[in-house]
Amino acid sequence: MKPHSSVDGASGGKATAARRVPAQRRSRERVARIARAAGELCGEVGTDGATMEAIAERAGTSIGSLYQFFPNKDALLHAVAERYAADMLTLLEAADPPDAATLPLDEVVGAVLEPFVAFHHAHPGYFALLFAPQGSAALRAVRGRLRERLVQRVDRLFRARVPGLPAAKRRRLALTAVEAGRALMQYIEVSVPRAAQEEMRAELRAMLVAYLAPWFGGESAAGSALGRGSGARAGRLAGRRSGGRSDRGAGGAASGGGGAGPGGVAESGAGACGAGGGGAG
Image (tube, rainbow, N blue to C red; front, side, top):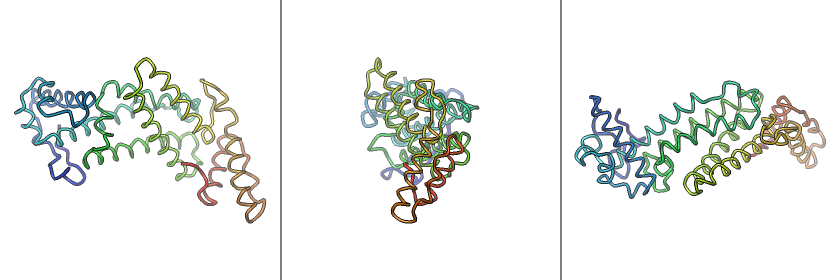
């Protein structure tokens, strides 16, 4: 494990870099056990309840071993958060659907969500550690970098699907989808009984498909009505926005927002954004 430093180099005045890099295989394995134990305990009792003594006991090592590698708990949790972020991005990059431009929209959404579910089950401390309200500045910095990478990834999928959609609008859609999806998934994983989680994940998937369908269209295997005619809906939406502006001022010039299909979506989105910030996100 390489030492990590936070953006500001400290959290509450404490160092957030690992004390030393383990060179031997046995030391690397010990650090991996410590990181796994810290993540598990954060998931069970929260970051405040995960003491260095409890982490050492869970990892099957001495408290002195922890301090050989990490000067304090902030440094240990920061290292675990960095490891989580790197592991998640590696997993997601491998899971990107290669045919995102042509897949039904709900299949694209499913392909994006499924690796998250698997990751959270394998890393139960992910939400407790990275999204704790009282998280340190170093943890917030890791969270911010991870969010930006996730938004870029989703934006890339969207660009492949509708390349003509204005970049600013596409990013707003990506950011909204990432943050809404993360918040509801956190609720599902943390607060919903295991027996009901699959149904709640289906609701999350349907919500994202319904939100994105007006811009990205596509038949839905779970309910083709979500995707059918979405280009026309986007055109009507842009037309209503343009029409409202025309009624207030220049009159009738924006009546051409009814193009169907991805091309129509791109043109309508461009018209709405270019004419003064129309478009949710």
